Length: 179
Image (cartoon, rainbow, N blue to C red; front, side):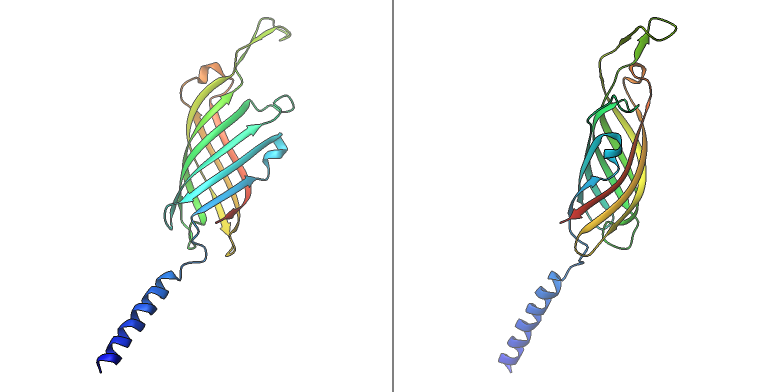
């Protein structure tokens, strides 16, 4: 009787340990992604996200503009940490809202000396910090591939009078992998 009872306890312990190892196939805590529409603006954006739990994550994205002369974008580069809150049923996916900070390098204002704008002085690039909010949607496959769409807006905090604008924007259609 004691042997049967001991065998039952060992089998129960083995089953419990095995059952705890069966996790949600979507529950992988790291992901890396590339913005697929950034090349349209002669730029590059890569992001990393670390999931804290089922509904929240922290991330960091880096955006770099290769050629500012071909578009009207004043941004040279940005580094943007963010916090996301997810509302989907799957692990860290579905609809989300985010709050972000953004360290930016922006072209300085042009000060025109003539009315026809042929003579001007250009201020040096301005480093500034912005705070903003955004939202979007993320889909993740069981194998870890993901697609994401997001948009966000924020305001410059310190040197807004030294640039031609006071607003920063984030747009993305990204593809990546969760591991």
